[in-house]
Length: 136
Length: 71
Image 1 (cartoon, chains in turn purple, cyan):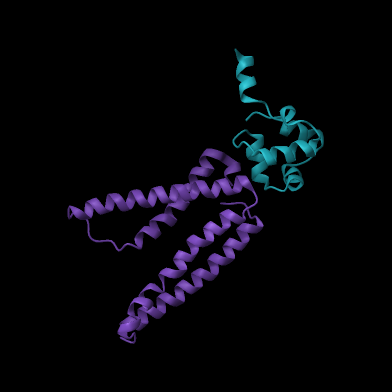
Image 2 (cartoon, rainbow over the protein chains, first blue to last red):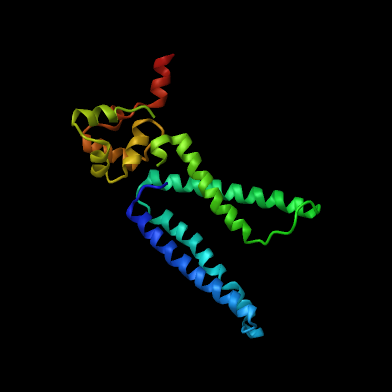
């Protein structure tokens, strides 16, 4: 858990808004495709819509790192994102080889994002274990 | 990095939160610096030194001097 700095509060607000947009875009896209309401010309645009808020969250994390004035708290977030990236990329690499040898089923690419968020949690635990109370 | 932050704070009867507000960082940052788990940047070290009106080397123990003393 990161300390509640002003930058962290702004980051949280952005993530809440982006999550709302994600829910709306996802429901709209699923509904549109299910009921064949999406014209061919717009299919790529509608399909990519739910991805945009998720990409926005990565941007929000980057902006948070720029705006955070507390250097120690910023370092904690950097550590967390490094753990998240390492975790998600390792999992995706391992899964990719397992899938290539027909040992596991296909996983859609966006599962990497879920793994990445899980990795953020792992990074938070590592911060807590290695830095104690200072790890927030 | 070893330092005298806790002593200087105790001399003034400041809590970690009090010190954190004075140097404009979180309480967790003060705790991490005091326990030597995080080395502050030079600008933050200067802020701390100016607050206590002491040179940086009076607050933070140079790792190289510390090891040479041990020898």
